[in-house]
Image 1 (cartoon, helix red, strand yellow):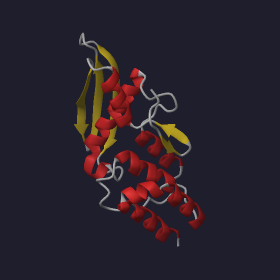
Image 2 (tube, helix red, strand yellow):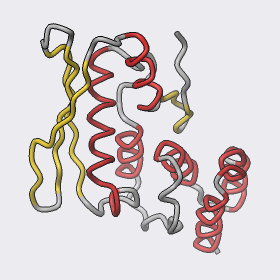
Image 3 (cartoon, one colour):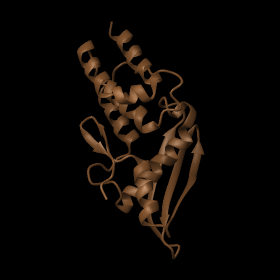
Image 4 (cartoon, one colour):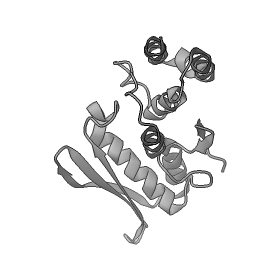
Length: 179
């Protein structure tokens, strides 16, 4: 089965929701369990496990997130961490790893770490936007140094902007920053 992907900086990435759909469809008798390993100093570590019908652990995935370390983590660092752990677990199980093994947030964080620039300005009120779309748009904005590249990124995100109008504010904020 061909999984849906999103383009993140030229690489195809299979979002976690697509991996979960395939897992639930193809492995109906298996379990997918998450648990908090620790939560200290505003950092959560989570573990996801795939359990076969005999209760044997088949795959695991771990993730950690710091509260407030990103826009998403200001309000949903535990949920974001759980999603990352599930994505890594499903990747270890072999689902959605043909082109990319990292989670979308790991890709975004790695790209952000490569260029130490002033922080990106994101719009408030995008909590209702799925995290994979918000990450994709944020990554499209990354590296927009002039109005021409900003315009190109805007065109590449136009379908998402039409579906979630508050994304337009991300481009407006970036445009103001460029002046």
